[in-house]
Image (tube, rainbow, N blue to C red; front, side, top):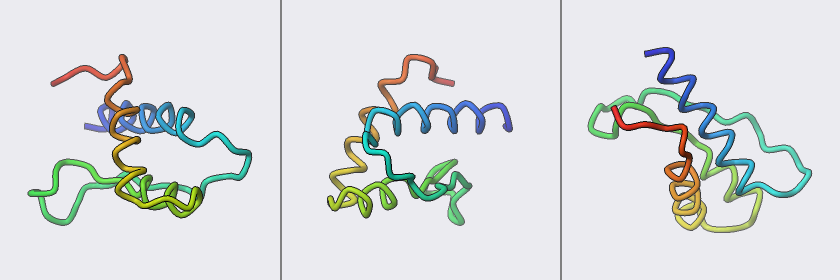
Length: 78
């Protein structure tokens, strides 16, 4: 499972490179297992942090993030 988490972390970093174009650092984001399994295997706060930094709504940023994240060709379905 650790290998999968590392793969996801790298894909998040690549998505952030596409979405976060300024020089201001983004606070350290997290990737963790949600308290309730109905919310999936992993959760991240990337959209909230990036939305605050960019002055956009979290939903708008999350949609852009999902597009960038799933556009990563290194991720393969399991």
